[in-house]
Length: 170
Image (cartoon, rainbow, N blue to C red):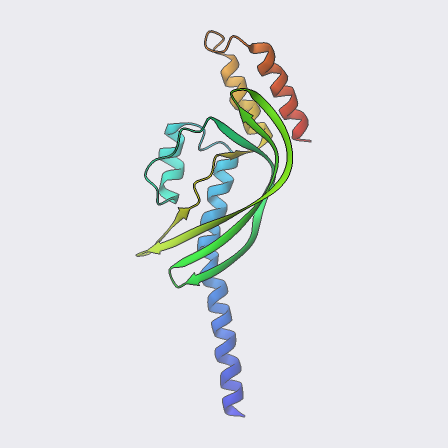
């Protein structure tokens, strides 16, 4: 009987330990995708200041596009080992913003983020995805472009895209 109780207590403490262990890398990934949704990867300065401390890669690609996202949430998380975790994030992608305008989409994407602990610090090691941003973030980005009409003479198209982004946010 004592062995049974001891086994149950040991199993319960192991399960609790696994749950607690995955909370830190899950919080890291949640911070990463939340800041990404708000546009922290759309320019070099914010990437270096805000995002680089969260990731293991040293440089960010110069993306020519970004996915427009209606929702994002942690779908599942698990510890692979004591120093590595897998956190799946589910995105509801409703569009693609590129130099050619906005393309409406309606799909779900699951990204399998991997986080690794080095010393006392967790960092995201993969994947390196194109930015995923809210429609309001994309609209603000385009509004800034409108201020520079010399560089972007197609202001009618940009205004149209801003209206389309606002409709995607509903």
